[in-house]
Length: 320
Image 1 (cartoon, rainbow, N blue to C red):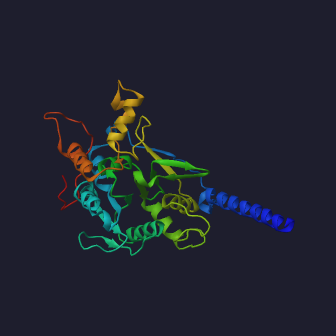
Image 2 (image 1 turned 120 degrees about the horizontal axis):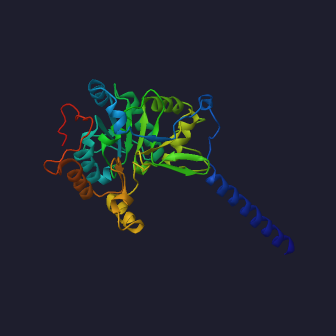
Image 3 (image 1 turned 30 degrees about the vertical axis):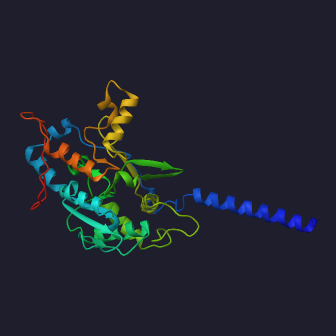
């Protein structure tokens, strides 16, 4: 009996150690060794849009050239079971992308999309980004979002207006987990052409960037993306306005207003969000339609916003 009890206790102890090991592995962020490209000094961590003073220093031909040069390929990840979100994104902010492509986990007759024939979230994103890179033509900026995100593409273009897409940019709302800093998927992810080029290349190395993640731990696709990019020397950047306010929001406008009221009831707008916000997340289809009306259609008669440049809608689109 003593021997059996001793064996039982040993089994319990070994089981506890094994569970602890799995727990540690689960919180461990793999793939954090630096790459050769990682050795270069990383100069930008907080990405900010140009100020009005900076824009006014440019000539009119220069501003026109810049506004026509920044073009965005939108990678919108959808699922057939949420067709109403899919349709709403297509009918609202998606029209403001220079090219909006929907990527689905399976084929759907109701709406046009690229069928990835894949259920794993990271594998879907892996395939979608590869497809976007191969089919982007001369578009040099990429915006990745879920259909529950509402995006103001003109503000995104303004943020990257003076940025060179041939440099590696990976921008959004940054979050830190252990040693890993990544861009939150829910509020949208921006990649320059160079960042995506490096990413697609590292996709070919299954040791560094496996299509289906590791066997002992399951990372979210946003973390897996950051790890793969870090291998190529590309780091997460937080998108901000000139006052340091975040431009990529993981909440809806309503939630942000409520948060602002709780922080500063006398100045809700100041406590809410940036005037140049790019995304709002977790929105219902009805809320997205209301946002479309407020952002693009409602205008106070006779009021001039004194914007220094204009982003024209994609040619041939029925842009609002």
